[in-house]
Image 1: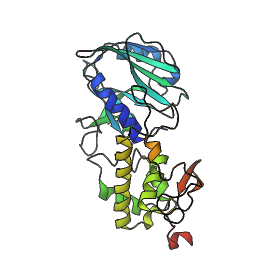
Image 2: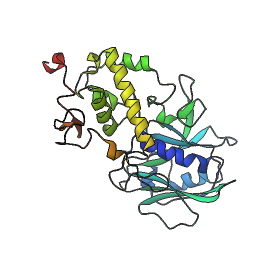
Image 3: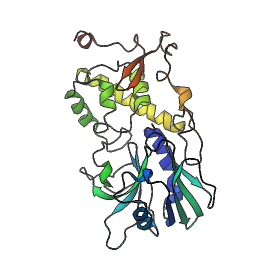
Image 4: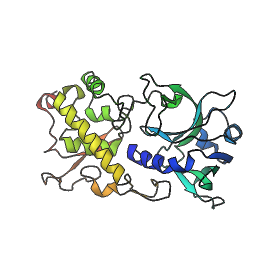
Length: 307
């Protein structure tokens, strides 16, 4: 599933192409791509046609394109969640249909001319929807790529991500003190910290030398600071390298794959030597997924191991 770096790469690629563009037409050929939209394909097409886009914003793994205000309508945005295999691709006008194409928007941009924005999704867990914008509780901008203090209603429950200037480190530390569950489980909880999925959780925990099953409330303040620093470092490096691609499902808006997979230290490296100590990386079942860690460098604290 695309995580923060992958979605941010898509957002940054979309931003210059969609800002100030007008949606000339919409073709929603597969209603499975509209499962989060409060209406069918006909409503989706009619409600978007003729509307102008004002930018591209993101919080965690959610992406939205704010719509210019329209008389009689609330502040709204076109929201996208990529699910496991969703892709937002920019194409030339009249370009052939993409494999697994679900929705196509024809755009007219004042500087770039005509182009097509295509939503393709092999596994159909992703979605597009028109959603109302609501104010952020802290009055800070809703996310990366916007100065407006609003988010779509479907994103309102999602915590800020660690690269967001408004992310509150102290609040995160306090949340951990109330959590008896494993620290990796907390890192994947999008209501506590967003944008960190399985890959980057494993990588950050490895870098911080923290065992993934360590109870969150047992982490010292110093360890929490170190872990947050490593989470940010891992996400920033992944962003610089275009995200992580293991197959053709994750690509940027031009269809290009990221190459952070070549920089992984823990995730997917079962039985390979740890880059720090040389011992074998192990794989353990975790929440219907897997955790990858070094049992020597990332030791379980004695108090937790005895429980």
